[in-house]
Length: 294
Image (cartoon, rainbow, N blue to C red; front, side, top):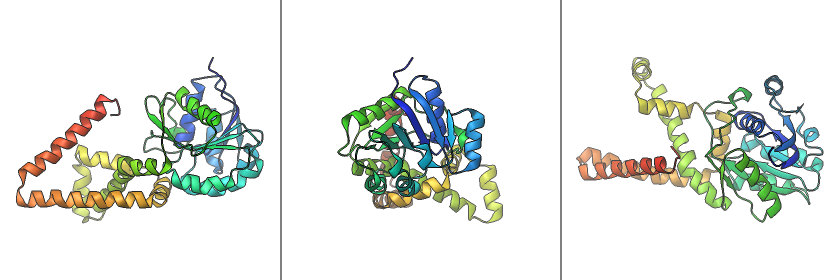
């Protein structure tokens, strides 16, 4: 039996990540005394109950958090400010509030002002996920071997340790870093690749009908990989792009310069430059495999 970390834990939002947390907790009984699922979408809440993901199902987030000693926001980051404002008066002293958002400066900006005295806010970001969404997309072992980054700026150490222990129980490796550094890192390893994938698929869709049909019919592995990324939830990624726009646009500018340099090398037959870029990319792939991140 696992050590009980929370007597009453509330997951606000039961999409892919929320459902994966709920499923993962079922693999470790005793970690949470009572798991409460809250979602403003009646269909999601009903489906979560049909799947048996929690112990209670409450549509209203403010009602769900009453008496909770742990709350995790699992909705798109653009919704955080409104949710935080709604639940703040109902959070009990000593409650630990956390999230799973892919941007951290915006989360601290939007949630921080509403956190009541005596409630501890520990921002977190599990770096795992698929392109699927909704309660049926939960994967109980999704976080095993993946990283969860914590950005507890001036946070309570006991509360931070609890959230860290929760993610470690779910199989994640944890690390702590500043919110600004987190957003710069994620801009290049996650947000920019998604922006490029959405753009490439959009370019393919804008081609003449005959050519577009051939693109889909004869799609090679590279294009198929882009379409997998591009199938991700549009609301979630819209919010991520807008809430990390400074870091994302900086990385996009760097990428654009590098892409222009590669295009010039192709135009002028600079084989040394082309091979160097390919070899550096192969090295990155090998390093990812070596550290079991691919």
